[in-house]
Length: 153
Image (cartoon, rainbow, N blue to C red; front, side, top):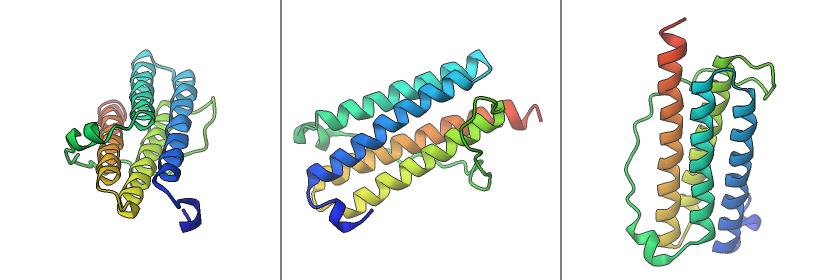
């Protein structure tokens, strides 16, 4: 992220929208790779949440932004030391979960950086809200990882 890329709030929002659109596509691909109905459902649910983030960014209303409830989400750190394999149709169940957790971690870090860069209190709050949403997605994935990989492995 360079300073020249984000000269206005509109630039920041456009960038965030691109990232959300990419997340929607990624979850669609991951869901098509998933080999279990439960994982497919989890990934499709996350895809829906990413679509909601996109809609939120597209329809930013300053009055709505101030009413966003930002709750800190506990990070389980289960995937932090793991390495994500490149997206591949032959990925294992475990690899799909790790890939998804890493994507969510990167998204949370992006929104954290955007919040830090924002001089506008409303945008800062929006990006803090989105950061915690992405951290919540990572947590959801890590809970699945713990339940389905660590307890069965």
